Amino acid sequence: MKKRNSIYSYLLCALFAALTAICGQIMVPLPFTPVPISLALLAVLVCGGVLGAKKGAVAMLVYILLGAVGAPVFAGLTGGLGIIAGPTGGYIIGYLPAAVVMGLLAARGSERAAKAGEAGGAAGAARGLKTTKSLGLTIAMGVPAVAVCYALGTAWFVISTGTGFAASLMMCVIPFIPGDVLKIIAAAAVCEALRRPMRSFARA
Image (cartoon, rainbow, N blue to C red; front, side, top):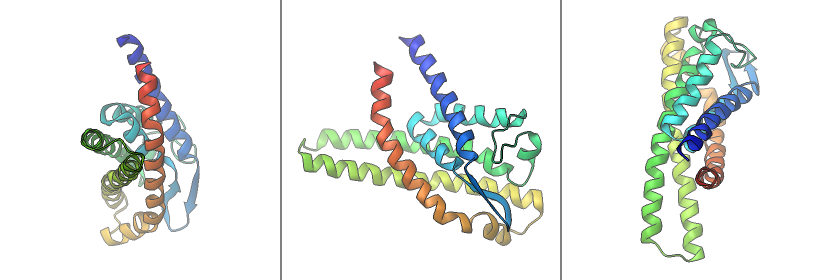
C-alpha cells in the first residue's frame, strides 16, 4: 500500500508539472511587457490546492528543472537558463512558493472545514452552506499565493531590467490583476471539485 501511494504521488507530481507546461502555452503576448498572459498560474494554484505544499513544491520543482535544462515547457515553447535569468524568470521561480503557500493554506482550510463539519448538523441546507464557505475560503487562499508570485517576479524584473518599481508594477502586475482574479476563482472551483475524488482514489 505504501509503495502504491508513493507511485501515485510521483505520478500526480509529474501530471501537474505537465499540466503547468501545457497551460503555459495558452498565452497572449502583450506589446508593453515581456510578461505574457498565460494560464500557467491557474495550474500552479490547482497544483498547490490539490496536492498540498510538499507535493505541489515537487511538481513545480520538476517543471522549473525541466525548463532549466532546455525542455520547451515555458510560455511560447521556450526553455533554458536564459529564460529563468531573463525578465520573466522571477515569475517562473515564483510558481514554487506560490504552490507551497496555496498548499499550506489549503491544509489549514481543510482542518477548519473538518472541525466545522463535526460541529455542524447533517442537514442539506447546512451542507450547502458549508460548501459555499469552503469555496470562498479556497478563493481567499489563492490571493496570498498569487501575491508571493507577484512579489518574486516583480523584484526580479526590477533587478534584471533596471526598470523602476512603479513602472514595473504597471507593466507586470496591474494589467494582470483582473485575469488573475478569474484564475483564482477558477482554481478554487477546480480544487473543490477534485479534492474529494482524488482523496478517495488515493485510499482505494
